[in-house]
Every structure is written in C-alpha cells, then in structure tokens.
Length: 133
Length: 274
Image 1 (tube, rainbow over the protein chains, first blue to last red):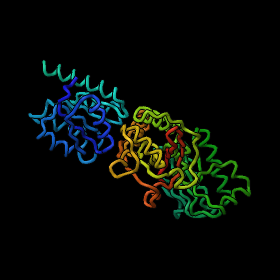
Image 2: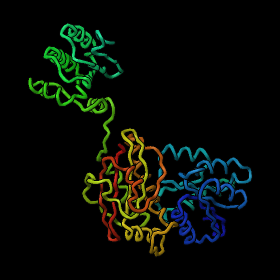
Image 3: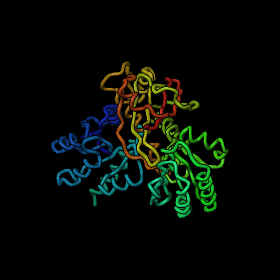
C-alpha cells in the first residue's frame, strides 16, 4: 500500500465528491491531501506539488480527467506519477481509452471505503512493478 | 414527380414515398394520380392531406386500391394531417375503418417503424430505478424502495427543495433525469455520504444533489448503452426549489417514481423534451 505520507492530489469539480474521497483517504491514514476542482487547476498544482498520487474525476468541465492524464503522461517530470481515474461511467470503450492513455487504475462511482482501498492497493502494486522493471 | 397542375407531388425516400395532395383533384386528373401511385406501391406510402377539406369518392377508391396493393407487399399506406372535415367525409362512407391514419409525418414514420418510437421504455425506467437503489446503498448506506411509477400530472410534480438534473441525449429521444429531495431527506443522505452531521443546505454542499444524479445517470448509462440506447455523456447541475426557468425546461411528458427510505422520501423524474 502507499506510504501514508504520500502527497495526494484529489481532483473533482464536485466539492462533495472531493470531500468523500478526502474523508476515505484520511481514514486510510493519508495526511497530506491537496484538492483541485478541474484538470487545469490540477495541472498547475501537479507541476509544482511533487504529488505521489493523483486521484482524478473523469467527467469535468474545462479539462477532463482524461485530458489531465494525457498531459501528466506527456510531461517528463510527472509522467510516472501514479494516476487513478474516478468515473461514474465505466463503459468498455472509456476504460480502453483510459488504459491506452496510461491510467494505472480506475474506480467506478459509487464506491465504498473498501472499494477505494482495494483500487489504491492495486495501483500501488502496478506502480511498484513498473518501477522495478 | 408531380401530376398535372401540381394537384399532387410525390417525393421518394429510401423507405417510403411521401405523396402530397395539394388540392381537390378534378375527375380528369385521377387516372394520372392512380398510375403514379401504382409505381410507388412497392414501398410504404404516406399521403399528406394537409391541404384537403373534401375528397372525391373516386379518389378514395384509388387510395383503397393502392392501400390493398401496398398491403400485399407487406407495406403500409397512411394518411396524415387529416382534418376533421375530411375525416367526417371519410367516416360518412365508412372508409375510416379501412384506411390507416397518423397525426403527422413524424408519428407515421414511427408507427411504420422507419424511425424509432419516441418513448420511455420500461427498460429505460428500470435501469434508473436499479441504479438509484445501488448508488444510495453504496455511497450513503441507505436502503431505498421505489414506489409505483406514474405519469407526472403537472410540470412541478415531484420537484422538491433541491434537485440534481442531467440532460439525456440518446438514440430514441432527448430528455432529462431529475433526482429531487425534500430538504430533510437531502441533509440525511448527505450526512451519511460525508460521515458528518449536515444541518442545512449551503453553497458548499448543494452539489451533493448533482453528484448523486451523476452517479445514478452513470450507472444507468452503462447498462442502457449495452442495450443500444446510445446515451451520451453529460454534466449534472443542481437547482434549489422550483424556479420558472427550471420548470420551463421540463414541460414534456414525464415518468415520476417515488422512493421511500427510513431517512426520508425523494423522487426520480424522467422526462422527454418537447
């Protein structure tokens, strides 16, 4: 599992969903959590924030989670940042597009604390395997 | 294609022919009318009677003859835009029970099966019911039970203190889904979602209604698109109360589903855009 000291960036245009994700992360022991309300704000924060994990909503105005993911993966300094997409619409075509764009894991809304924890563990394993290669 | 003096025109499309009768024909024009119609009888035929208040018996006989010919080919002939005067004229001779009618071109195309029917199917409603049950169960740990759904009688029936709404664009129709909560229910649901006591609706918590709508829509969208509904992605919004600007967007026919739970009741309203 991720070190609880990992700096996490939570991105969602809905304050309620940011609060839900942040609450679960705190319950899982994370203490350093930043928030952004769309992909553009997240991009600015990611460039200067040295985040060890980004959890982003997919469907947002201005800059979607997928667009943010593509920008992160295209940036030489941020490309390896673990990235988890949150979506309310898990259709095969969407999932395939996210995987193609380099997402580490995705979680479908609604989700429970256990559901998010499982996805974080899976993300961590995937990232650890990527680093060891 | 058109007859003499433009008494009728025929437009041929891939699946049907549209015949417009522009005025009451003269007896001498009917042979030409019949021969033109015979050429189209291998396809569905829609006769637009918008400009017609009276019709000759001989003309009706031609329509009946073509009607039978299209039937033999498993095709359909329909009369559209038939006004009351003309309908009474057809009724007088008993032709109304033989010929087939539709209100307008759109209805005729739907009834024939050329365009999809513009209606909310039970499949569609059921997906939203199941999705609502699942979202409330997982995200707020609340068991909700849907009541019997009904057609909304007024444009604001089921609209309560706070509503999340999302536009629907799919293959069959455009419309909207509204999840509407009385204040007390919303505060109870939100308190359980956030794990803290929420005592009033504030600018920083009202997007909870939109987020719930988003999740319900997303779940339903995934299952409906597997069945070929072709729902497009959409962003949810939230509205407080019943502002006219909001209600005027949702005046089309709507299905209203009441939900009950021990944390309060709420409504799901699925409507068509007119």
